[in-house]
Image 1 (cartoon, chains in turn green, cyan):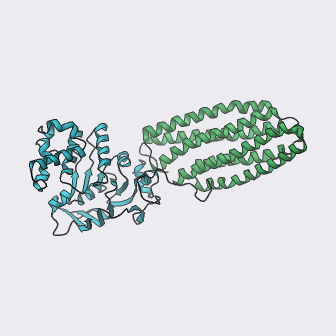
Image 2 (cartoon, rainbow over the protein chains, first blue to last red; image 1 turned 135 degrees about the vertical axis):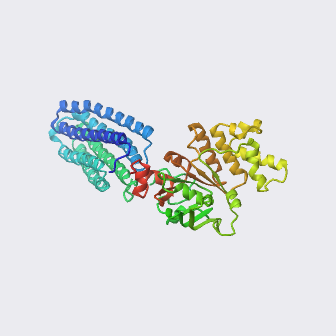
Image 3 (cartoon, each protein chain N blue to C red; image 1 turned 45 degrees about the horizontal axis):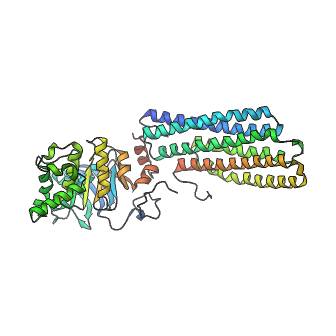
Length: 222
Length: 278
């Protein structure tokens, strides 16, 4: 991309993009570790995930402040304007993804008799998919690549399918083993959180597409 | 979905970029330029410009210095006639009438297509006479009360009446810069023009006076066709509904202001408005 005549403007934008990338990395790791903690019953790791979410919150605040500053001082236009608006929104969405990871981590200690749960073997695969979406959408953001963004959006169907399958699995498990309902309900929320992560990654992808092209992917239901 | 298309736009599909796309049109244009070239001697300053100007919309001309936007603006009321080496080809119509036709009364044309300049240039006369001069020479007032009415109406429309009504006999040059510029706009309005051309009307004014002029432009929109040349992208974005980007004598892009500033079609436009030019 051609540089701005005012070099400091490019530095501002680069810094903003760096913050978003850092947020994306943290969110992706948070999902992976929350799932790992869940599967292994590792409450220490879960506590770490919960604690580290504060860093994401702080970064979001920094992104907001930086974006507002750029809007106020640089009066960006066209692709620059879209870039800043997208960064504002993406920052908020990635922070929410972090919240879902934190929520999953918080549930780790509430699951009893984990060896009995078949869905526990499905959840990591679903989590992997969701985390990959987050990873790839941030790569698309870094590359300003609308094609890759669209590809991420299309992957959300798989996450949704996983959710449906885990949901059915858990419900029948609850019917057969009423004693495990409380733990199964926790897993239901975990699955739900991962499904939301997929939706949020999709939102980020839409913003990446908008930032790069000026339009939303129009053939995809929003 | 497209961001922030102005709500006043009657256009169904605002995703419009090119001049060829008829969506840019709304009713009959007030002025229509086709294939306009402007030469200074052998040098071609404007090359094949097609553009329509509408009463409903303020049209902003933007572009780097020397891009031809002021030259083209001056072609719209034949101000270039005063430059001996300047030559205009192609057609420019006002209500379908060729303004470069041999029978065209240029004085009359400039009353119909008025102009406001970068530097406020009131006559060294009273505020009253500044406004009354045009209507008098164009025979628009039958009597003193008629003239009084035109003066008051023009000053009111220019948002200046309340500030000067008690000192109409004072010299126009005694006003502040912003007031002088509004006086010049009132003077342009006084002869009941159809189009007002503004060449950098705020570049010599402070932000408050600028805001007042911009507010005035918005109030005058719909009554007069307004074309404004500005170096301030922010001003073009604030006051206009249509923006034309000129570069090296070419009209690169003409479209909805909201599109031009959020998602321009042409790379050159994008580079210019985002500060990546040259």
